[in-house]
Each structure stands twice: as C-alpha cells, then as structure tokens.
Length: 398
Image 1 (tube, rainbow, N blue to C red):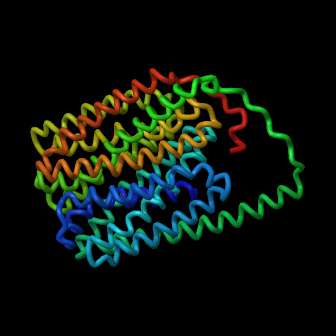
Image 2 (image 1 turned 90 degrees about the horizontal axis):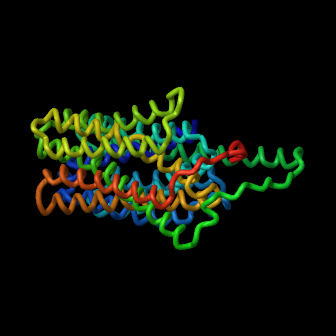
Image 3 (image 1 turned 180 degrees about the vertical axis):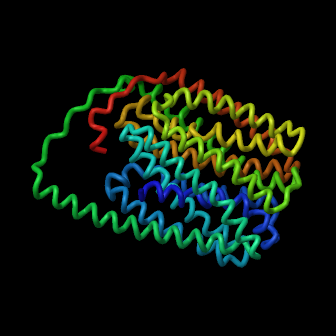
C-alpha cells in the first residue's frame, strides 16, 4: 500500500505542471518554452541517480532509498510554492529530478524482479491516479486565486511519504534481526542460466541500447503530450481554464483507468501484445490530434492517446527480465527508467523549442512522429531480443 501511495504522489506533479504552467508563466513573465527548460534541468538529476539505483538498493534497501527521495521532493516543492521568480523553480528542479529517479527506478526494479505483472500494472495505475488528480488540484487552486497552494499540498504529501518509508525501514530492520536470530541461513539456490547469458558483449550492448531507446521515445511521447496538452487546449483549441483542466484530466484519467483495468483482468494480456496494440493505437490517436477537424476530435484524441499508452511502460518493464534474465535486469531496469526520465524531459523540452519557434499547433505533428518512432523502435528491439518464456521459481523471495 505504501508503494502504491508513493506512486500516486510521484504522479501528482507530472499531472500538475502542464496545467499550472500557463498561470506560472504569467506570474513569472516567462516564455512559453520555459516549461521545457524546467523539465530539461530536472532530468539531469534523475538520469544521474538512476545509474546508481541498483547498487543503492543492494546497499541501503528500498525503504531507506525512498525515505531520502521523499525528503528531497518535499524540499524541492517548497521552492516551487514560495518561488519569487522562475530562477528558483529552475534551481530546485534538479532536486526533484533526483527524487523522482530514486522513487521511480527503485520501486520499478523491486516490483519487476518479482515477476508479478498485476502488481506492476497496479503500481503504474497508482501513478496514473496521481497524474489524473494533479490537474484537478491545480485547477482548484487557480480558481481560488493562485497556483501556489497546489504545490503546498504536494510538499506536505512528500514529507508524509518520507516519514512513512523511514518507519518502514525501522520496521524491516527489526524483522530482519528477528529472522536472523530464529532462522538458520540457507545456501542460495542456483538459478538456471538465461539464454541471454550466452550472448556476445556486442549483442547484449545493442539490446540494452535498443531497450533504452524505446523507453526514451515512449516516455517523451507520454510526458510531452500530457505536459503540453493544457497549453495546446488554451492556445489552439481556445478552451477556458476549467475546460482545460477537465481535458487534461481526461488524458491522465484514461492512462489511469486502463492501467488499473489491465491489473484487474481475470487473465492478464501478454505484455508483448499490450506493447504492440497500445503503440499502434497511439499512432492513430496522435494523428487525430494533428488532424483536429474540430475541438471534440482533438480532445478525444488526447483521451485515446492516454488510454492506448497506459499499458506500454509497465509491459516494457515486465519484459526486461524476460529478455535479459533477472540478474542483468537488476541493473538494466534502473537504466531504462533513467532513459525514460531523459526522454520525458528532453523530448518535452524539444517540443517546447519547436513550439517556441513555430506555434502551439506543432504539438500534433510532434506527437504523431514520436508515436511512429515508438512502433519502429519496439520492432527493432524485438528483432534483436525476441521474448522468451521466463520462470520465476524464487519470485516470492524478492
């Protein structure tokens, strides 16, 4: 429950920032492309820390890692809430990147290595709950006079998460000591070698790079569409503040509903099918946003885009141990999450630069091209590393 709650809190700011940005920009007198700069700075911290999440989990444990992540996030969002200018928002964004990287990579790695696909979908469904609620929190704050109270709510929640993970760490240490006193140590069971262990170093490197590329482009599409939808709705579709908040809720809400639905299905859909169908439908939805014969088609396009992308990220995470084996996946998953963070920030920033040099209407062709690249990159990855069946004899021990 604490893991799911942490991902709700992790998702909140991703749903909030795009909706808050038009008002933040007016407060600070910032250019429209400043949103991309915030995301670009945040990714520096996120990518750096995800390179070390695997070793940090082994050394500190997941609860301690996440307690630190919550503390850093609370400190960063304090800066957002009181910022007198854009300079402070930019300054604390690197802390928020480090925090998000720790929480995202730490929990994804811990859950993926259990082989529990339903739990992984629930985890990302919880993230979707946060991203869906985020625009509503910001909209409520703006309607009362300012966007700042939304970030006061965020910093309080992050502080609570940090305290709860610290308590969980203390509880786990007591449990570990009690087990050490009562249960004799047993030798570790030897695991069957995964076929990927026989690959050449060149093939292994190519698969890792291809996988990271899929995560990079996919997350750039998901985050870029979500972050820029509010500005697109205001500037191109000419929606009011309330309608824009509801439209953003539709995108993130669809992302959430489909993820939870995938977790609750009586018979789970194979992850490979989720990736293929989701990325294919995303191309059609992005094309509808670009086409936009009227406002309703564009808004529905965003909803369908969010729903089609919903299962792709957790399915890609679940496929990593299947492709590479559990031992290698322990490090590779955190690298993939780092690549995803880089794509979410870097490609969102690139969309911002494109919008700044052209117009907000450029969002449609941008998300369509990214959706097509996701399809092509995933096909290339599957050609390099076809999915093999994976057994989890010791999954309960993770």
